Image (cartoon, rainbow, N blue to C red):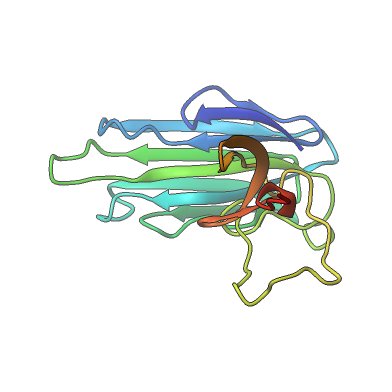
Length: 197
């Protein structure tokens, strides 16, 4: 999946092509914010939406909210998300969605952690393709799972965050790559940490 970068939710309308995704976020400048944005994907495709971080003003929907509306089965669905009630694994049955974001000016004692969410073109049914997990790049694994047996393939872009590992072994410095798979967990090749001397 090709990521088109990140945009403020109150910027222009969002047009996604096949196999494309975009990160949207709220601006946390404490100022009043009110906008409505259209999201479109190609005809025949649908839209997937999920948030990695969602921590709006604790005063509730009257102070700050994100609203999603779309049609499914001929019916209009409208859902308002406030405080920490984040949209997770939302899939439309059409290629259009509307986002509405509203925030009252924040007082000095108030704060908003804002949100970071992803919109992506869903080419198939969410039951067929693996949608992004709750918190992109994070999987439900434990330290007792020390190997992968009969695993399943990850969807394109499901683990989009990479790291560069700079490793010093004695006087030599090596570099390797890795993928973030869980908070504080990096998946890399064993040879990155194996000293054969």
